[in-house]
Length: 167
Ligand code: TYD
Image 1 (tube, rainbow, N blue to C red):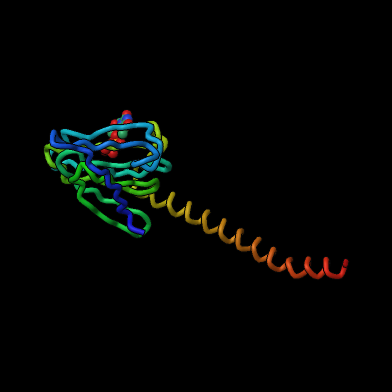
Image 2 (spheres, helix red, strand yellow):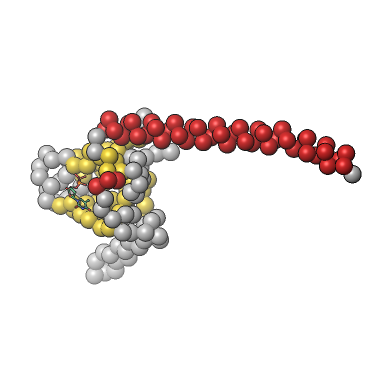
């Protein structure tokens, strides 16, 4: 699955101009707990360079443009945010970097949680370590699940035989 997940917001404007409505749990696939926006980013400045353990976000470039780089596992994808009707969904455990902000860029971000510095993963090294340990835990859960499935499948004929002989 691509790291680039767009959500389209239909413009509701009329002959007076444009309007876009963002609604939590409707057009935005989570409850909106926080809204913030980046603006006035200085020329040549890049932002982000972190991931979040739990937080989900949706970024919309209301005006201007910037380039978003997303990384997860071995994937690295990048995309331009330059439309007020397209939101980029950024899930948890995704490394993000924002580059090439135009002087007029206003990047609106909707977040699923209140601000919590403890949710940030601030270095790429820590991000890789945590992603790896989560992968190991997930793999162990899968192995345990498969073990119990096998035990269950092996027990079915035995139980069937016991109930047949008990008749
Ligand atoms: P940070 O998330 O590091 O910005 P970026 O990823 O865009 O480079 O946030 C910059 C500073 O602002 C940092 O000191 C934390 C603070 N901050 C809040 O207090 N509340 C917020 O909701 C956000 C997003 C940041």
